[in-house]
Amino acid sequence: MKISSLTALVTGGASGMGEATARHLATCGAKVIILDQNIERSKQVAAEIGGMAISCDVTDEKNVQEAIEAGTKQFGVPRICVNCAGIVQAKRMAGREGPLPLADFEKVIRINLIGTFNVMRVAAFAMTKSDPIDQTNARGVIINTASVAAFEGQIGQVAYSASKGGVVGMTLPAARELAQFGIRVMTIAPGLVDTPMFAALPNAARNKLAEAVPFPKRLAHATEFAQLVQYIIENDMLNGSVIRLDGALRMQ
Image 1 (spheres, helix red, strand yellow):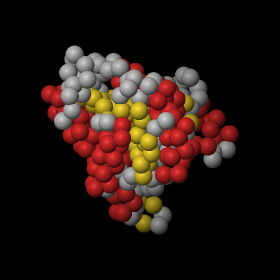
Image 2 (cartoon, helix red, strand yellow):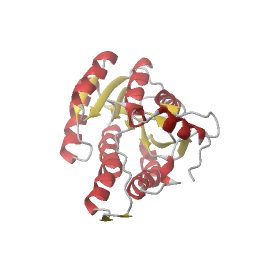
Image 3 (cartoon, helix red, strand yellow):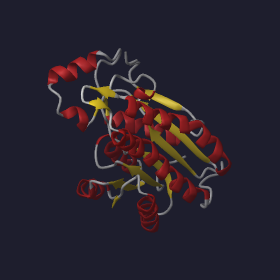
Image 4 (cartoon, helix red, strand yellow):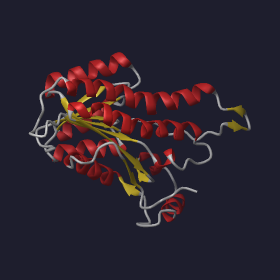
C-alpha cells in the first residue's frame, strides 16, 4: 500500500510511539487523525502535522464510534489504523498489602486489550464498506502494539503481560477474518523504548536498562517504531504476524 493521500488513524498519538507514528505518517503524505484523551497535546501535534485531533477514550464503545465517524467525515475512511494507546502497570499479584485489587487488573486489560479491540472492530468495519484502493483489492491495514512482556513478562507485570499477550493472540485470527476484505492485521512487540515513561528515570537506571539489550546497547527510539509501521504498511506480504522490535532483548 502506498501511504500518500491515505487517511491514518493513530490512537495514543499525543505522546511516545503514537506521536512519533503520527508525525512520521504525515511526512509520508498521510492525513492523520489522532485519538487521545490528552486533547490539548493532541491538538498541538495535529496542528504541527496538518492532522486532526479528537478526544477519545478507547474503552468507550460510543466514544470510539463517534470519533471515527467524525474523522471520516473530515478526512475520509481510515485505511491505516495504528493502535498505540495503552498503560503500564507494575504491581505484584500477591503483594505485602494483599492481593492485587481486581479493579487494577481490569483497568489494564480494559485499556490495553479491550481498547485495542474496540478501535480495531470499528475501523475494520469502516474499511470493509469502502472501495479497494489498488489493483490487489487492498482496503486497509491495522497495526497493533503489544510488548516483549507478552512473551517474557517480569515480576509485577501479570496484568500488563496478560493484556499484551491478548493483543498478540488477536493478530492471526483477525488477519484471517479480514483477509476476504483485503485488510491486513499486524502487531509490533517493542522492547525497551525511549518514551516519556522512561524520561523520569535517572541516567544510571536508563544505562542499566540499555545494557540489557544485546545490540544496539540502548533504548529504542520511538521513531524506529514509526519506521517499522511505515514498512508494514508498504509491504503487502506482512500479515497476521508479530514483529519484535527489541535489539534481540529477551527479558530474564
